Length: 250
Image (cartoon, rainbow, N blue to C red; front, side):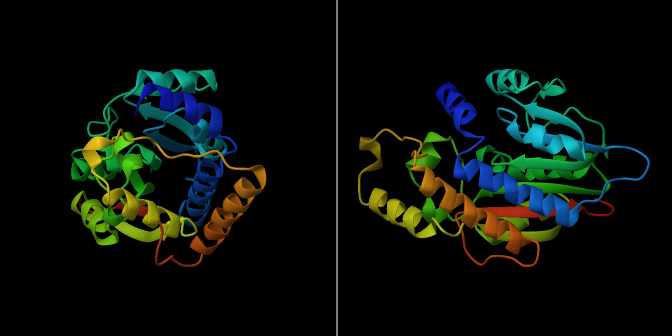
């Protein structure tokens, strides 16, 4: 991610509908699928932790560790007061096997060249009964300049993400599309951009500011999705969320 994007994320993440709503979805899935271990605090890893806002929200669930390859990201984490931070590549996590009860990878796997290797690392560091929560971009047909600007390697079909996670030794507990409300708009942008010559434009990240009332409505739609995900899966959306545990013997 470009340095300017960390600045913008840090300024927007607390209240912007997309960031806030996706964090609410993560919390809903954590509440559905995770249980605190007996006799000790849960050990939680946020890999690709960015500027650290999710780390603070996960803290009531246990002891949190943030990991990111960007020194800029970790610097922002320190501004938020986080101290247990590690600079590393996602494909080579510097932690012993079976040491985390919850691992969150929010908007990370689509950036990686070796996504199957990352899935194997998730399986390796998960403690027995632990859970991995993975959020990523859905639908190759929804590829836009936003993906190029964010240095994405791919957008996933549902079956592709499932195959990657299983190949790494993870067992899927839930896999769903999310962020359904903006699907028509993103699809339209993708089709319009496909009609233009990609080499003639500079990719820009599309994260438009919206009026407060629109921000509130879009957040409410994601909050509704978080409620639905406690009970079922969504058939379409701009993003995918997966909950997985390490497969026995993997």
